[in-house]
Length: 114
Length: 115
Image (cartoon, rainbow over all chains, first blue to last red; front, side):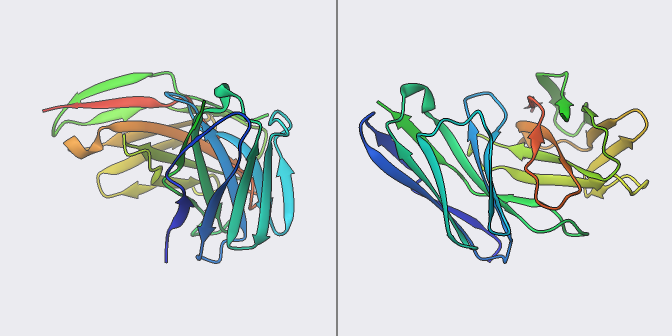
């Protein structure tokens, strides 16, 4: 299995809702990432979960909360989002630097906040 | 902080021709990796090519090759024999060699293939 699987592919939620995005990989990668991508912009790093340690981009608001139940699964919990949070959310995983070093991306979750 | 600059917001090329996309970066690290990713309208981010900074030899993958100029901090992508399926947004990206840092992306170049 050489894929990163993200669910759901599309999500519409109200500003008072609580929802979660799911990301899963079975490549044995020990680092996983969440990126936010607005239209016609590059992805922006939100969170890194690497070897059981979470790193947070300090500009990410607290209404986004990552969770890593195990090394293959990374969730992103959403609460009280704003319309400006509407974007494509990409998950990626990577293995440690080496000859095969690379990042594998999922196909993303298109989030719309209404 | 590392930065990645793509100065061409959009490029257009005739099918079967060759096109070069530019990328420069700024870092004080000596160990790092550079990537070109392709993102078609389907939004899947696809790895095109990778270059390790410690390797002097330019990476190649079939019709795709890079010109890596470490001293100049330049990392351009050449696409030969352009095909309609190459149409996409192309992002240049950087990561340090620490093993699990995220990617820093340039703003992207929208590549149009003219039939």
